[in-house]
Image (cartoon, rainbow, N blue to C red; front, side, top):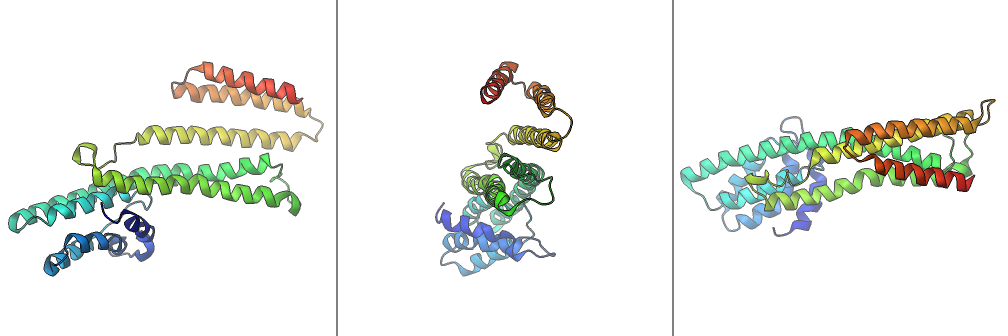
Length: 270
């Protein structure tokens, strides 16, 4: 694929021309424009037909749209060699591939980004705040205490979401162009369910950390012994973590090793 970087940069404007009539179609044409000019160079009538075709309704997840764009560029290269009835037949296949890749990528993207990485980035920011000794349960957090941790929390939450988005956007563009119907234009190259499952478990573990740590800092200055609360919270965390690891078919030996390391460090630091 020629001008891959240029097309990749244009993908960031997919939703810049969003409209209620045909959704992301103008953004899609803007992304495809360099490829269409190259493929149909010196053939104005066919080029205009291709532009009109690419203005048809399109809608997908912005970070996953590469899995449709690469496939469409490859299909346009095939269409450039067809005429007459063969062209009409190839255009029908073009529309099927365009709709199926866009819809499948959108479904995966909604689960991965909206339902998993977005809340995970929020939980991760709370973890950073707690590690930075910022008591978010207080209403009067000192400015000098919160500034550095808040900046790290903001940066961490943005990176947790955007790094996977940038990588998958580029990988989708490359894999779909190189792919075929056999691997659904690169969409089945990755085990999406396993990836989403792992990230959800990670998010649940971080949520447990936030909950137990919040309980600890809430009661550490009360009449209740904070060390007892810490021990109970840590035990409950490992029990819940054991359930998650069982669901993922991960041997409990790894949990035991982790528990040994954690308790050893706690004893050493105490």
